[in-house]
Length: 444
Ligand code: NDP
Ligand code: 2IT
Image 1 (cartoon, rainbow, N blue to C red):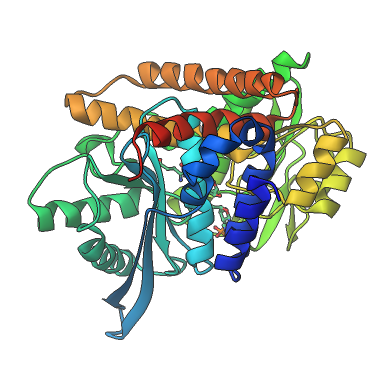
Image 2: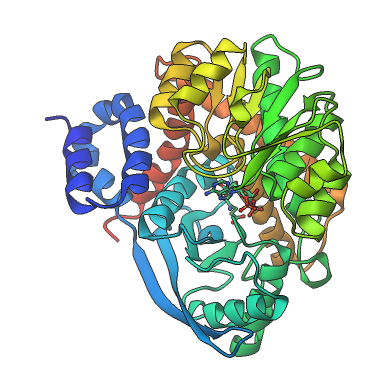
């Protein structure tokens, strides 16, 4: 049995009830076959793949807090410090009822390769809780964040582990988390990214994931003889990533016509009104039905279906496994030429394979959405310098990083004989740097 198959078997045996984690490991290891074959003896002797697929540390803790009725609530908190070979652990926190160990491990595993691709010194980690922020008052959110940080603060620090936001964790939550860390540790440190600009946050971090997604998509299209300008774009999600992806799509001359949330989706033939979407989702924190009330030309559909709209480019920006094989078939039938993942692992393995076979340009999340964590890396640099850079400077570096990531994964795919397979290219390019660092540092 090949080394890759042996390790895949082992990971399956050891994590039988973690489907999302197994899916992420399978995708990565399958595409590393040619690299691993070339170095099999060395990697095997160093148990490199076993170590790479096993988190260095898993922290699980209880998060008790008091709701507005005086009732004590209990949630579960997680931080998975997956791999610290190339820098301090780095990765977001997700607050969503679907969070469990499998989800956090898949996200932490993906983060290793994503962070490596940015070219910045950051290891892979992820955390979060099964806490559901929907319908909770500001005070309840604060109480939860404070309790969560009371435990988490023992495990993080500006040179050890630097969390940030993800689903359900935005500027408000980062503020409460930062305040509690500062109080308990009596230290004002760059221990979280995505902070408000008034207390050490970076300009352009809020926009970075969505903007970066479009910078990379534009470059991928350009290098394949297409122009983003004039294209119709379907976007899913209506949160941080989706909102700024839609905004940048407009700025680059494309027309974004859809968005979605967990209740339904919107088709706006005139193109999504960014200011209105932002007001409804970011400011008023309402459902998308409110968007359609203010925009009579737009249609609201409950449930799933955002990928049934005819588009040239599809940008899934909501959550994992939101684009399955039937969706992929619809996209191809409707003439879609490119899919770039704003979310983490939004496309199932089967759908990814189908899209690639049909010649659709496909860029995986660990490359396409790396602009968020890359700008977090820039926030860490600014915090270390105790300086703040202008929006233009940060945005300029973000553009450079995203264009650079595309060229790196394109080159890696060519070098290993899988030209145009950007999934393999991203995994190979991300892996090589981490593998070199692990081998150089010995058995630790
Ligand atoms: P937000 O919480 O801001 O928005 C999430 C959006 O996705 C909301 O519209 C939400 O709908 C929808 N959504 C979430 N879960 C589900 C679900 N189970 N089914 C259907 N819809 C769902 O999160 P972000 O925009 O920050 O994150 C979106 C994706 O991007 C995630 O995969 C995240 O890991 C990834 N990502 C985020 C980065 C960042 O910097 N924030 C960086 C890189 C990747 P509703 O409001 O109804 O819940
Ligand atoms: O998935 C991701 O890359 C994020 N949620 C952002 C992580 C970060 O540390 O900025």
